[in-house]
Image 1 (cartoon, each protein chain N blue to C red):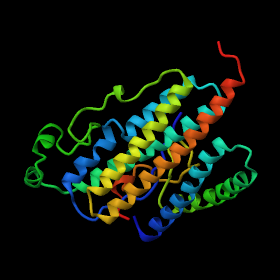
Image 2 (cartoon, helix red, strand yellow):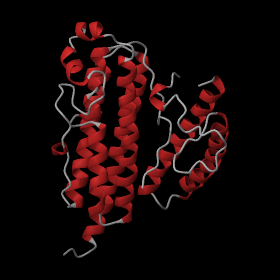
Image 3 (spheres, each protein chain N blue to C red):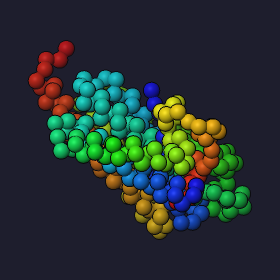
Image 4 (cartoon, helix red, strand yellow):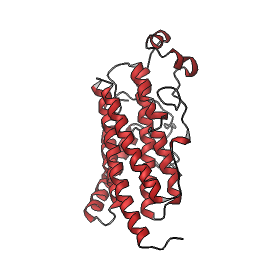
Length: 190
Length: 86
């Protein structure tokens, strides 16, 4: 069961309308290293974890990723608010508008639709935790790219928050990997 | 949303963020008594601030988790989270 809290995890502000930036950020909504991939990855993997601790970490981080997914959508919503078709065309985003209007569709920045091929659920806890740690680093690098693409300090503030969360999640997954290795070395596996 | 609502929202966000962070930390350090004690202290404070926010703005959580509500049904009131201007 999940509940919805009618608030963002962290406030999202934008200093100005910026259609191109919205398109760049879209990759964190529906791209390979985005927040949807993260949430679905962790929430799918938890069923094959052998310990309560690993199940808890994947449940809690997976749930937080859904909150980040909402923050990303909020950035896109605010960056494109009030944009006219003419402005969209001038920003060279007419092809996006032609297909999706101003709908926020889970795709990467090039319009490639989200796919579960971006994630894996190996059923092997060690393999899955390694994927999760790599995923957090890839997301951190993506946020750094996005921060480099804008000079809007309000937008950068929320992007920096999300970048820092990737670092914390990486740390927690690393601790979970150590714990799982200890658990599996101390136990016969069949 | 009015200024008081925004101020209370900010407090809710700050407290819940601390609780998210402590929750993840406790997942991998379940024997850390100091962290557990801080978690409990903030959790009590969080419940108070949430009540104040909900009194001012409306229910924060769906499906009855924000307790009994008064008329009218405020859950559907705008702004939704992505529409709030901070």
